[in-house]
Length: 222
Length: 321
Ligand code: SF4
Image (cartoon, rainbow over the protein chains, first blue to last red):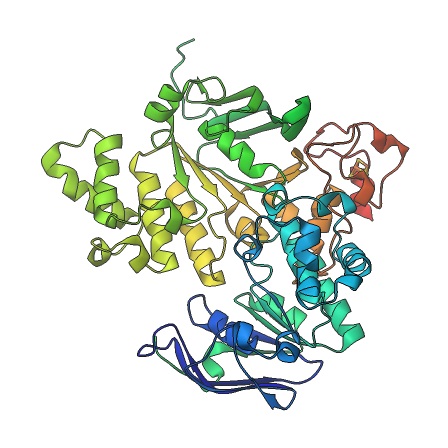
């Protein structure tokens, strides 16, 4: 179970983006969080994935409260998450070839021995051909780069996936392809999903249930 | 050759437009191949396709904003000017802003961050119109009003605007030159659905009966909402051009790629087209969609010409399937 309890978060102590939001995702469940842009749902997604320290409230991962945030999070918790953001160009290190982009979490976690095999399997799964793996981000399209970012998010075999507007910049076919990859991974791994977005039709088709940002018991600050 | 522009002729006529980029080792990236289309006054054409298909390069070609290693062929006539042959001075002084109003992809980035909306509007009024000095302030206010930008926000800086208002400010700027062609490059990326609808509805309204609108987008719902005609681009080629109602309704797309794209929508089958588009640096001689196409036969090793709106050897079978 991934639980967020009474989370208040933002970027300035005195003016949080939202207050007291609670949300939980059961193991294997896919929850879509719908809300307009600028409402704070991306911040919530970052808190859920231990990437942003909330001002108050708790995040509990499979029964254990979050032990820290960002690089201070305990490795076992950090690696339980795979995260994909809206803009692959902002989240991908421009110096890395796509193969290294995908492999980097393995290397950072002392699992270099698995790189060849896992990268081959995952890049094939997201539909990236061998000829693209040697390219750097500026040499591929947004859709191709987002495929690599999804492969990277799956590379450690996470129990929880957080997708923040993963497909907002993509065409219909690439969107359907990436969602299919996420669902295939979830079917075999039992991973839970928090998909954040503003496209109701998409999230309702994709997820087991959707919740509206305004219905989270949040007292929003704007 | 000085035929006056009549209202019945097309606003924009693109014939055989190709763009290729010369790369190291004398290889070429063929970003746009042999595009043909026309835009009549009052008409909205949506050019759809996935990222990297060449649609943004086509837009840059029309604006004369291609990088130095680009080579073009064909013609793009607007108001008697061939946009592909015009020199930079002509493009800067008479085309961008005056004959083509550009509604940019990310308005927040397009607006100058350190200046208020009012000062940017006034500057554009000064640049693009012959408004006498004392009237400039009034003209800027009127320009804002035209794009439904609220007057009490005129003294704000771009970062103080919501996404929707930034988009309106950018639209207001695009409309000042009273250009006959509006070119909107992914105007709805990252906007919420209701904002998407408002944005494209406003574009449509500004198009009216006299202007033409070329909207470049990957958002099929936005295209369906306002387009009169759809052009689908794949691997640098327009593979289908159709009346929007026939395309989104009955009988539906006739090109297998276009059909796949529609079927990928979450409100339809939500199934992706398998595979990836080919590299623009390494296009096959025949149909570029063949490796992904379930209708492909030996005939597809020859490039299918665009014939009555569709470039496919088996377009009819595709429709019946
Ligand atoms: S020409 Fe052949 S390969 Fe190309 S889209 Fe038509 S049927 Fe498919």
